[in-house]
Length: 384
Image (spheres, rainbow, N blue to C red):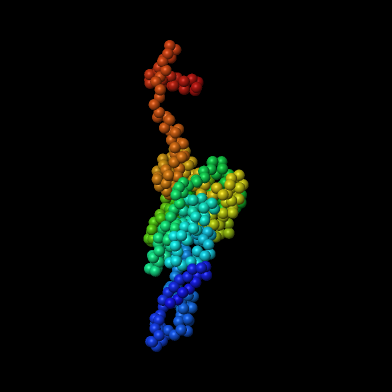
């Protein structure tokens, strides 16, 4: 029996040969003391093809999860982000030894460092990695550890959607161009389309339809959701209108590239990461500071939120707003209901029951036809 420490106070065990004082050693099933020592060392180190028998750690589970995400054309950031917040002791701990107390203690330790909704998203990433590990290793029987220990925090579903005024959005875009043209082009595209950054960076040259009056982009749909067979599906696209000005800038930037080449590139010619915030978070912070806002509150996603609210306040039907932003009506109503309510007040006020017409010695109620004639006469006087 092997008992191996993880270096952080925990250990794992595994039987690998018979304990028999009477049989002769055969170097495989029955070992001498020294043969057992050598076999145990190799097993613990994962040498000679025995790596698959060593218990999977959280670190290894996250690596496997990243490979799975990449194979499914999903965002590997979901497997990388937890590493920024997991302790070295937890990363080195075998999944089979995890307890709900361990994970709950880690989750609760994040309170005060980030908002509850962010903690919940982080926990979901860790849960996904551990669940994938359990699906491929029958020795992992403790799913309750993360299902209980990393349960979502209550009252954390309200997302703080920062919405910028049109002047602030224009300032955001102009400042980005001032820092770097290619970075500005990315920000401009996000501001005009309201797309997620991970969608915009997957645009190809052929996705730009440069109509002289009605230009548009064929925007790739988000890679969120879709199950494990997503990599077998063709990436769907949906049409998003853009301004003539943005279309001209995109056309100039893509000149000479192949149709299947990326439409948006970094200034050094490299592709943006699938989560471009990793490339340019410092630039975004500088832009936000330059327009007088707080980088702790305002991110690139503020451009998406602002686009959605701008359309809602312009009385664009909610279903169309949802379609143009690759989301659902339910999500629009859930996260932007305050803006819908504010706008609906102006719309519904026109349908309110009017009080009875005033009656008095000097007041005469006009019929509908009389009112129309009076309005027409007034219009004619204005024209005269």
